[in-house]
Image (cartoon, rainbow, N blue to C red; front, side):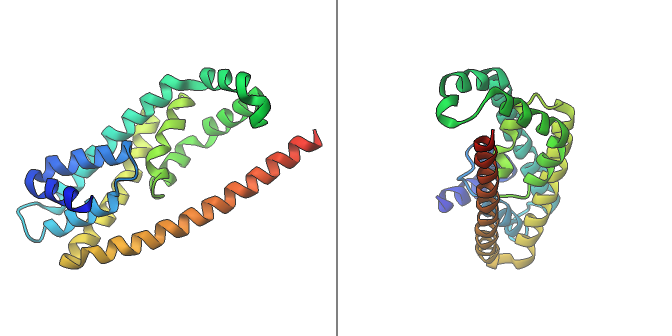
Length: 202
């Protein structure tokens, strides 16, 4: 897959980078680390510039984030309630749980969107619950833009600084991703344990 991504970036430059990052946001398994670091490396071997790559990649990220936000908006809390009505007794989830989660996202959603932009995989998918909770679109765009811009600037500059050794950055990012996933799994297990315990007490 990586060779295919690199061919597109070589052939189409900024447009290729923007489209690939947009697709990466919608289909997270496509690695943004490869696109961004190689894009940074290309600034030392082609007429592409760091600023241009950052702008193109940020534009692509925003397009992908908006698409997922709209998908979440279409699904909405109401449809979640329908799922709970049908499967809630199996999932051990009630409408109250849904509204509680929605209220939490209303309160902390903007910062959640911002910080999740630095977490591989989650950085894309966080746009869906933002849409589902009907988060203010302007606020969503602002926090998504700032978080995305920081992420892109760091990786593009890292790719430019190491040049032909850009793959080293990708390897380091894989380690970072695995570390973050391990933490998220542990946090999720703690929350799940607390949730089940609370349900049993009730």
